[in-house]
Image (cartoon, rainbow, N blue to C red):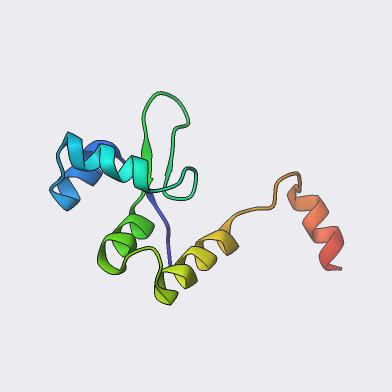
Length: 88
Protein backbone atom coordinates (compact mmCIF):
# COMPACT_ATOMS: atom_id res chain seq x y z
CA UNK A 1 0.00 0.00 0.00
CA UNK A 2 1.14 3.52 -0.74
CA UNK A 3 0.82 5.96 2.14
CA UNK A 4 0.54 9.42 0.67
CA UNK A 5 0.38 12.74 2.42
CA UNK A 6 -2.06 15.40 1.23
CA UNK A 7 -2.57 19.06 2.06
CA UNK A 8 -5.30 20.13 4.48
CA UNK A 9 -7.39 21.52 1.63
CA UNK A 10 -7.42 18.10 -0.07
CA UNK A 11 -8.27 16.36 3.20
CA UNK A 12 -11.19 18.71 3.79
CA UNK A 13 -12.54 18.17 0.29
CA UNK A 14 -12.09 14.40 0.43
CA UNK A 15 -13.95 13.99 3.74
CA UNK A 16 -16.15 17.09 3.40
CA UNK A 17 -14.72 18.60 6.57
CA UNK A 18 -14.84 22.18 7.71
CA UNK A 19 -12.28 23.99 9.82
CA UNK A 20 -13.81 22.61 13.04
CA UNK A 21 -13.65 19.01 11.78
CA UNK A 22 -10.04 19.41 10.70
CA UNK A 23 -9.09 20.97 14.04
CA UNK A 24 -10.84 18.16 15.91
CA UNK A 25 -8.91 15.56 13.89
CA UNK A 26 -5.65 17.33 14.61
CA UNK A 27 -6.39 17.15 18.35
CA UNK A 28 -7.43 13.48 18.19
CA UNK A 29 -4.73 12.11 15.90
CA UNK A 30 -1.09 12.00 16.87
CA UNK A 31 1.67 13.77 15.07
CA UNK A 32 3.76 12.55 13.12
CA UNK A 33 1.78 9.36 12.54
CA UNK A 34 -1.33 10.93 11.03
CA UNK A 35 -0.06 14.39 10.14
CA UNK A 36 3.19 16.25 9.78
CA UNK A 37 4.09 19.91 9.54
CA UNK A 38 7.33 20.17 7.55
CA UNK A 39 7.02 23.92 7.05
CA UNK A 40 3.97 26.02 7.73
CA UNK A 41 1.45 23.75 6.05
CA UNK A 42 0.05 20.56 7.53
CA UNK A 43 0.22 17.36 5.49
CA UNK A 44 -2.08 14.44 6.33
CA UNK A 45 -1.51 10.71 5.91
CA UNK A 46 -4.64 10.11 3.84
CA UNK A 47 -4.73 6.32 4.20
CA UNK A 48 -4.38 6.33 7.98
CA UNK A 49 -6.92 9.12 8.45
CA UNK A 50 -9.41 7.33 6.17
CA UNK A 51 -8.99 4.08 8.07
CA UNK A 52 -9.29 5.87 11.41
CA UNK A 53 -12.56 7.48 10.36
CA UNK A 54 -13.94 4.18 9.03
CA UNK A 55 -12.87 1.83 11.81
CA UNK A 56 -11.76 3.91 14.77
CA UNK A 57 -8.32 3.89 16.31
CA UNK A 58 -8.68 0.96 18.69
CA UNK A 59 -9.43 -1.81 16.22
CA UNK A 60 -6.99 -4.57 15.29
CA UNK A 61 -7.41 -3.68 11.61
CA UNK A 62 -6.32 -0.11 12.22
CA UNK A 63 -3.38 -1.20 14.36
CA UNK A 64 -2.22 -3.51 11.54
CA UNK A 65 -2.38 -0.61 9.09
CA UNK A 66 -0.31 1.55 11.45
CA UNK A 67 2.27 -1.24 11.71
CA UNK A 68 2.30 -1.56 7.91
CA UNK A 69 2.92 2.19 7.59
CA UNK A 70 5.70 2.17 10.18
CA UNK A 71 7.39 -0.70 8.35
CA UNK A 72 7.66 1.50 5.24
CA UNK A 73 9.69 4.16 7.04
CA UNK A 74 13.46 4.32 6.75
CA UNK A 75 15.34 3.86 10.02
CA UNK A 76 16.84 7.13 11.22
CA UNK A 77 20.58 7.45 10.79
CA UNK A 78 21.00 4.70 8.19
CA UNK A 79 21.99 5.56 4.68
CA UNK A 80 21.72 3.15 1.70
CA UNK A 81 25.39 2.09 1.91
CA UNK A 82 24.94 1.06 5.56
CA UNK A 83 21.83 -0.99 4.70
CA UNK A 84 23.75 -2.78 1.94
CA UNK A 85 26.60 -3.59 4.31
CA UNK A 86 24.18 -5.02 6.86
CA UNK A 87 22.37 -7.09 4.24
CA UNK A 88 25.52 -8.86 2.97
